[in-house]
Image (cartoon, rainbow, N blue to C red; front, side, top):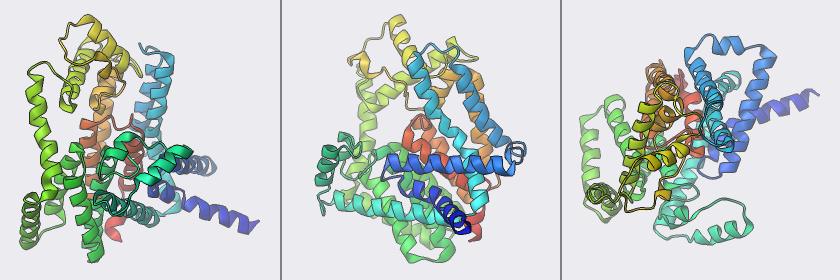
Length: 410
């Protein structure tokens, strides 16, 4: 019996590590192992009677529950269809994972294992990304088999993007941005050349091979943070800047320059009332978000309401578009601030600001600051907790690095 209990405890230790290992590999595997992690933490909370210890002593965790509770209340007055409201509520359930991930790590003290599994899994995808980009391997054969067997949901955006492997380029870019910073941090602490090399490879992948402009911004802000907190040598800073200049002059910079130039072209075509672009659509969603908060400022339109409020906006406003309105009809306005304010009004938006403030100011060291930067910037350009994989990744690293200085002590 004791051997059986020991085996179960061993399995529990590897639940969160496996979830983070699969973050860029398999959505289903990450969901499965993360749900098991949260379930085990919940069971231990009951067993140890630790709910008071977690939730009464830390206001941040109370805010996590408050935000979810507001979404539950939002279901009672929403203008959305019941199925849309419930689907949205299900997506934001992941905010509740944060306290339990934190508690799981506190119980099992397996932070090093979690970090190592994250590094192993992401390094594998980083290598495959380069192999795909330079056509060293033909991964399209795997995609064809996967579609034939229906074993994974690989869509055309992944297949047609040169450097993405199993996840959307936005997800891969955001994860690799954080991975690059983490490798640099650990390399500096341990004087590990391999980690320095992997950090540089991930940086190049994000800036020069990936298509996510949000990832570019995150990566560059984390680079500045590195200059301030990690890379203190002037010679090293100059070498990195020179390295970037050389790459900007190479053919590898084409993808980066092309994505940046799209911003000016998007702005130009918007002058002709053509919003068929990434910037154009975000601009319209921003207008709708402002309209929503002005019309329902206190409690918003309810959970899952952004799609219906968009339909109502177009019915009541004569917009002259050169793009079908169906392209805008979505519950995902690609900004967590717009999404939450439209659904939950000022009350929800203020709660989210408190959530971000507590995350940014918690005494968790440089990795906690990096986590805060990732969450804030990603929330500006994506509905991160509405999104499945970005949201799962964020709740994992928030639980991992919130008030935790273990990485600095290793």
